[in-house]
Length: 492
Image 1 (cartoon, helix red, strand yellow):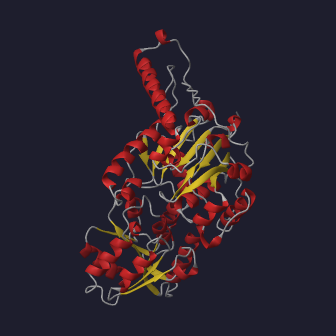
Image 2: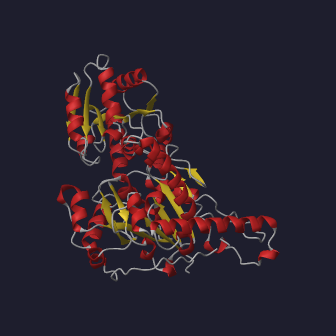
């Protein structure tokens, strides 16, 4: 293997679906490849035309992976100041209407040739592995790092029988991340090299606690937002009026994204917020209900279709209100801070990273929300310093990612376990061997369950997704799927 690292970034969504798991891994791949020291491959889902029509907005569809790749590359090149040098590969996938998610089909580890399989970055490792049936990630890749994006537990608790489903999902997430994401152990030989142990990165404390995890926000913002922030700072320093609009919120228009909390607050305290005008921007399944609820208020709350947050329409708003507590790290909050706005948000673990910025104001009660909102509308935002701008950037996010994942360690310094006879192993090594055997048995159980159509269907998988269908094979140029007997090759 080359002495250069090869990082394969697998994610669960792709543009033009404007969701965090489509956008943030794309920026991560671009910035990881920026300095040329690493080879980076972004691995994204390919959907059939029928599924594309269900998922992608504005009737955007692609006739081939090449068309889709061109769209993704054009989008990122319009938002960064350098030419991205990463490659793009597609894995077969299906859209689940019930889960409102894209799910992998077949063994997606096959997207990366064995000879370059070095580091796998699994964006949403639990999501990628719920129904994984194929090669064990830790056998194929030297290192497997999970980045947890989504607070699935908070979402399912809002559904029917939510508490029971959340309990099961918590166990399932722990199980699949433990067995498929790496834990690098020390060898029985003395070494001065620190061996990496943290292989799950949680973006905030709002996520489920997982084995071998660390909390670190490894996301940044689109550089265009920082450019807006610099312009606003210049206007403020020149004595100009930088912000001519009041308060707004932008997010997918579903109740779980904070709209219920926001409208409840506005309804309860509308007598204290007389004159407040709030614009809501978003599209989603609950758009009609949100609009009807907003019309019942005496306040001027206007509901608009969703738009890109980088649209110049948003530049002149001064206050961004985000009461959501289901996010892990809210991208739009980071973007609003980057544009120099004041942010009003709940005192919640998902907002912990933002508390270091003076323009972030957190509340614990409705009364505090009212006071913070009124104060924000009457004040000017604090100037964003160069260091604060850097902390919001993808350059800083990439530095945090490399440090949290301990990927700065040279390949040659990463020793592997040497095969030694059981009798010659010291007691602690025999214990480690026992743990490895138990993990292998756990992998075997998951593979056995995920290999049965009846079990997959019972736990919510899209029907007939054990192997890619003929259409997906044709689209991606894959060999026709054949029925295979369950074959597991577990390596210690």
